[in-house]
Image 1 (tube, rainbow, N blue to C red):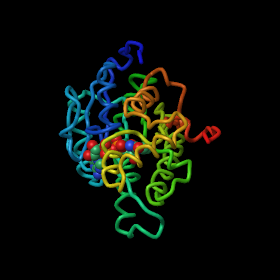
Image 2 (image 1 turned 90 degrees about the vertical axis):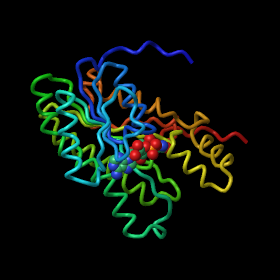
Image 3 (image 1 turned 30 degrees about the vertical axis):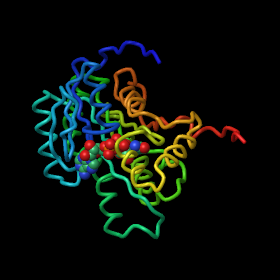
Length: 261
Ligand SMILES: NC(=O)c1ccc[n+]([C@@H]2O[C@H](COP(=O)([O-])OP(=O)(O)OC[C@H]3O[C@@H](n4cnc5c(N)ncnc54)[C@H](O)[C@@H]3O)[C@@H](O)[C@H]2O)c1
């Protein structure tokens, strides 16, 4: 596949990517950097942050750590224009399977993690909106689990459904301040996370084939494909877009192709 040369549409902009040390977040941080942004990666384990980004250690379940990390990143980057709230964890099971403690933890990471990061970032995003109109944005990594019923994902889906609603509510709250809020809804993306799930499957090759076949394109999406959608929503070119969920799922949500019999 040939791709068009990347522009420098993020030149002069500063971005924070949570969970930017692996998978979709790392691909996003690397892409924003290539397109000219100064980028900080906020991660509980930032060892995998792409070269050239600023790694900042924080667990998104720790309010104080998030505030300190966001302040340090903004200080080092000289401001903040784009927040990408991407850190998240999975959970497998029906509503009977996950104990309350796991429910609290997954919601704490996947939902409250976004809340804490946005709270810490909003004063800086307001400054961006006032000084450099059209640049301030928040982009969340949601999931197709928010919009389609997937088996064995009760807790994870509940968390991502909350992310979708949170994204819309935040978009309404901050639209008059010039801060856009959107999310991407990936289908199954071939990241280290999915690699770990496949490793635990009784037949990893069969599980991979099933995940590929579930998406109408016949394959999982890549971290780079999701990153490209996040970068679009965060870019000045998307200055007219807020309160949107952009599916990056190989057609899984919207298409009903005839099965091959
Ligand atoms: N991979 C998929 O199929 C898929 C599909 C839809 C949505 N998503 C979403 O994409 C996002 C990224 O997933 P991925 O597949 O790239 O996963 P990944 O496991 O490869 O990367 C997740 C990153 O988040 C960080 N992280 C996890 N918990 C954290 C915490 N408490 N505080 C700070 N950092 C934390 C990890 O250290 C890691 O660097 C998640 O929100 C996930 O729900 C993934």
